Image (cartoon, rainbow, N blue to C red; front, side, top):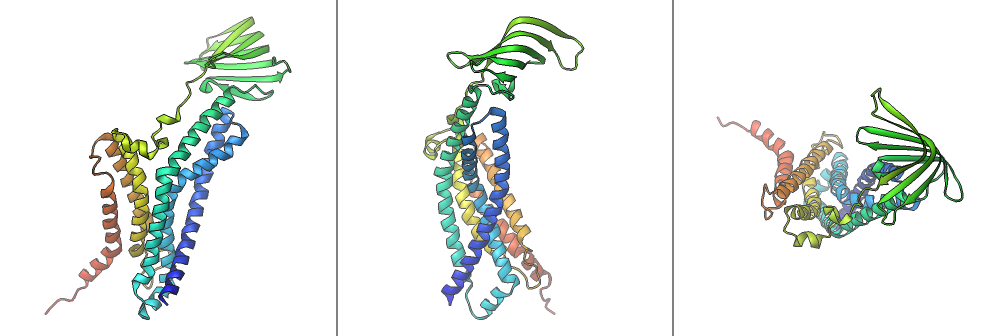
Length: 363
C-alpha cells in the first residue's frame, strides 16, 4: 500500500514539475530567440549558427529554471492532493506522512545531483562554446562579401555600407556609406566602389569613385558638401572578444584554483544552485499544506515569495563575496539556512499565532 501511494505521489510531482519546467523554458526561450536574432541581424551571423546558439543558451537556462520548476511543481501537486481531500483520506487511514514525503525528497536529491553536473560542467562549457561561436560568427559576418541590396554594419556599428549592385569582379555599384566619428556623421554616395581587407584583418577599406560626401553634426545647420573622383574610407575593426575572460565560461576547476574573490564567488554560485534545488524540494512540503477550505493554488504565492527571496539572497551573497564584504569561507551556506527558517515561519507561523491567540485561559 505504501509503495503504491509513494509511486502515485511521485508521478504527480514529476508531472507537475515537468509541466512547470516546460512553461518556464518556453518563456525564457522566447527571450533567448529574440536576443540571438537581434545579434544575428546586427552582425550578419551565418544561418547555421543561430540554432546552435539558441540551444546553448537554453542549456545555460536549465540551471535557473530547474529549482523554481521543482518548487512550484511540488506545491502544485500537493495542493491538488490536499484540495481533493486525498491527503486527508490517506492520513485518516493511518498512512504515515513519510510515505508521501520520501519520494519527494529522493526526487530532490536526484534533481540536485543532475543539476550539479549541469552547473559545474555542462553550463560553463556551453557558455564557452556560445561565446566562441558568437565571436567566430561575428568575424565571419564582418569579412563576408557584400551582398547587393543589403545594409552591412562594420566596426561595431560605426560604419554602414549599402550597395545596390555587386558585379562579378567584386566592384560595387551605386554605393551608400555612413560613418560616425564622435559627434560628426559622414555620408558618402558614389557610383562605384571597391571593398578590400588589410593583410592583418584589422582594417577594412571602402574605396569610392565619382561621388559626393556630406559631413556635419546632426541638428547643426553647418555641414560640408564635397565632390570627389576618388575617396577612401578606412574602417577600423573592433578587437576580437575572448571567451576566456568571461567567468561564466571558466571551468569549475580553474575557479577552484584561482585566489581571486570573483572566481570564488562564481564557484560558490555554481555549488549553491544544486543545494538550492534540494532545499526548495524540502521546504515545499510544509509550504504546500492546505487548510480544509483553502483553494488549490492558495500556497503558490508563498512559493514564489520564497524563491524570490532565495534567489536575491544568493545574488547578493555572490556580490558580497566578489567584493570581499564577507569571507570566502562563509560562502553562500548561510542563505540556505535563512530560507529554511523563512519557509518554516511562513508555513507554521500563522497556525502557531492562531493557537496562541485562542489558547484557553485558566480560571
